[in-house]
Length: 18
Image 1 (cartoon, one colour):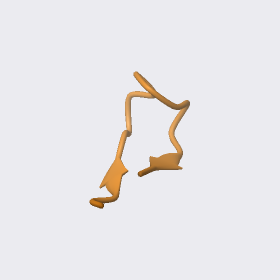
Image 2 (cartoon, rainbow, N blue to C red):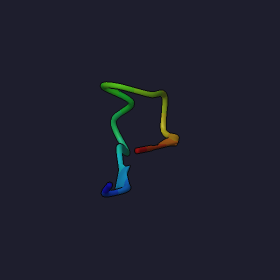
Image 3 (cartoon, helix red, strand yellow):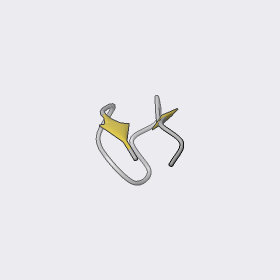
């Protein structure tokens, strides 16, 4: 399980997703 930060909000709008 790896947490990745999505600054562009592709998967989530600027939120942390696992």
